[in-house]
Length: 120
Image 1 (cartoon, rainbow, N blue to C red):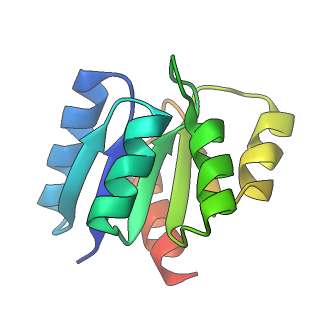
Image 2: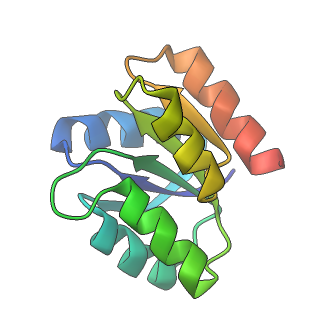
């Protein structure tokens, strides 16, 4: 069981992810709708993994990854995005994401990536 922070600007996506994670035995330690809230909650809750949407208004996932890197916040991050640009995927990996999952994703694929991100 992992402690996971869910970050996505869509309330329905967050709710779906929370239900899915809890069904699979994980503890959701918080939810955030943008990169700034992600940073604050990651400092407070110290999750094992952050599921991080890359495209959000205000402060996006790239902002959160850059700030975590600058602050030395060491946490596994699995980026989730509808962006199909391989350059943007590489940027997320270069900033510290362990992997990128493209929306729409299959539940089994997402769960495999979560497991792999927690192990690496």
